[in-house]
Figure 1 (spheres, helix red, strand yellow):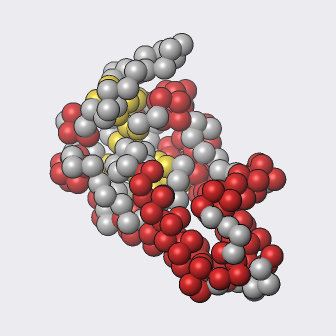
Figure 2 (cartoon, helix red, strand yellow; figure 1 turned 90 degrees about the vertical axis):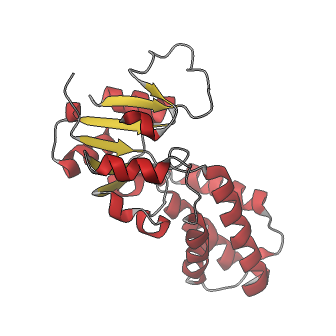
Length: 223
């Protein structure tokens, strides 16, 4: 097996638990709406706002990979329906993104990234809209390929191609590490990359899928 020159890492649920981050960010946004634009918040709660985003994603399937587009479009609809200017959605989106990037890393993450950076070129490869600089680890990565930038989400081959193009290496020289069996392991494997499944909580591998080449429970195990 070719020794990897590049390590690409998923972000959400690989470097930090994402569910509490999104829950806190959506709650912060809703509280802000109630204070600043009360008519836009009237009749809405977190569930109705999520349902609106689901409808937007179904309405624009070609852009459903772009979570920022979906959220912006839903907020714009919410503001317009309440009689506010559509431009207010940019202010609201920024409130969400500030909180969305307020993450708490798994304990092993920063020490492992600092060690890995000394031996490999590090890239992030994510379907979400986290920002490495806002999260406080931008200096540890050479680049970040998001679904928004690539125009497709994992496991689509296009996002892995975008990573190869950015890194300038062959697929076989990339080791992709992530928590999701389909989007991370199967997607990267089909793209010709080496893979490692990050299984922090002793989950069972899905029945019917070829097993991962390597399973780790912390990033430190890559070394």
